[in-house]
Length: 199
Image (tube, rainbow, N blue to C red; front, side, top):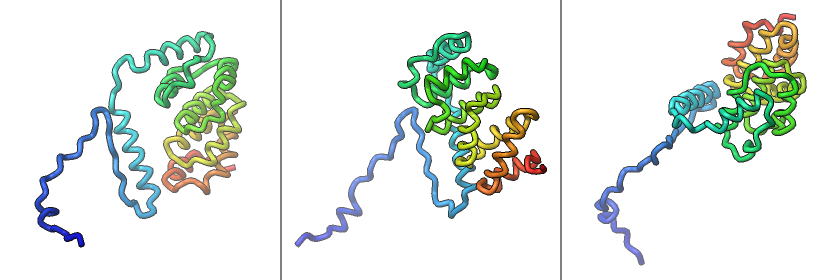
């Protein structure tokens, strides 16, 4: 029969403190008791903190070069499949906000961005598409806005659409009428002043 030696348990030497590897951050989110708004606020704070860490200056050199070349007419970069999310975002976000339809068609053809499953990449693509009135992205945009309630994604896209009186505002009104019941009050509070549902 094994005996429990309480003295060995109490008197064992202390463990060394936990160490987080360099360049890594760990976030712990406790129970927010059904408060979706608090969870979204925490996620936004984590993302802001993450963005405050600056990578080495040459981290995105390849993406910056490829973005500039693509904007000038080069083919879509072949390195995309091996890139990380941050590298893909760097490429997309460094493209000029105004591009000819043929350039957007080339991106869609090469990477199927309308069907991107990474929400950050899809948002970056849709943001670019909206600023170019890129009609082939509208079904993807609608699906994205109806299935994703994160304010960081929803608010910029709907506001950009609403600011384009002739092309974007009718799209925003149609989508917002369907999506509003699905959005958290903190999101609708910021979007209702656009008066998209006023008829």
